[in-house]
Structures are given as structure tokens and as C-alpha cells.
Amino acid sequence: MSTVFVLNGPNLNLLGTREPAIYGSTTLADIEALCRAEAGKHGLSVDFRQSNLEGVLVDWIHEAGKAFAAGTLKGVVFNAGAYTHTSLALADATKATGIPLVEVHISNVHAREPVRHHSFLSPVARGIIVGFGPLGYALGIAALASLTA
Ligand code: DQA
Image (cartoon, rainbow, N blue to C red; front, side, top):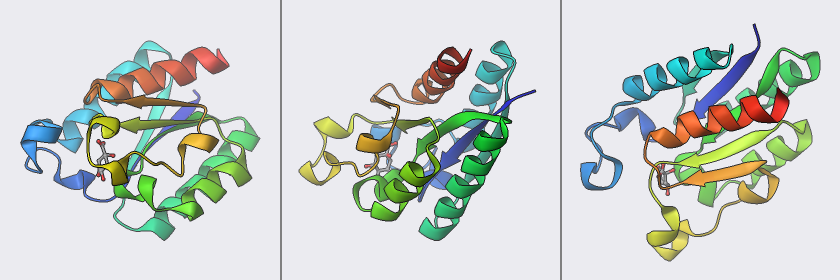
């Protein structure tokens, strides 16, 4: 069975209690369950991870690139959290590996502070899903499944 990586960046482990007016009450464990259910519909398995460390996320993108090259990975759904707006390293890693990556944000970052309007990942992402809450993760998985079907 082919796999999709679902990667989560800093502070997303706090979903459920973190700024519920913006991010809602859904926990990261709830989102993992949602991702597994969506992936199952497409015959895919999910490797679901979260880290607060930029370098760990870079390493996971590299790992995804190797799995993609080996034909065992369809792509990556990535909510990089605040690193979206700061990390050239994550963009470089994505570009270097050539993996199909769907950038996901729970909130509509374009309706928030100007600092959140720029993304280092968007230019290297296959597509972008913002503002649909946790549903965005499922939409990202469906998009990857349809791209590579
Ligand atoms: C976020 C949006 C980012 O601006 C923020 O730093 C996050 C979460 C989102 O999912 O809406 O941590 O990626």
C-alpha cells in the first residue's frame, strides 16, 4: 500500500486548547484520525508526524523524498505552522526532493496579520489549501490521491 506523509510543524501539538477562536477545538489526534479515514478511502496509508523543530521537519522532507523516489510515497500534506512564513530551509528541502507537497493551513492566513500572508513553501508546493479548518488535511490527501492515481 502506498503512503502519504502528513507533517505538522510547531505548536500544532497544542491544537484543541490553542487559540480556539482561530483553530477550533479539534485536537491533532482528531486530525490524525480524519487523515487515516480519508486516506483509507483512496487505498493509502498515512505516516502522521508533528515536530516543533525545524531541522527535524527538514529531515522528514528528505525522508519523504527518498520514499517518493523509491515509489512508496505519493506525496506530503504539510502544515508547517509558523515555519511557513520563515523557513527557506523547508522550501529548499521541498524543492531539492521534488516531492508533490500540499501546503495546508487550518486558518485563512490571508485574512490574518500581514506577516502570515507570505509563505516560503507556496512557490514549491504542488497546491495550497487554506481556511477550511481540519477538513483541509483531508482535501490535501484527496488531492494527492487524484494527482497520482
Ligand atoms: C497555521 C497558520 C500559521 O500562520 C500559524 O503560525 C500556525 C498555524 C494554520 O494552520 O492555520 O501555527 O499554519
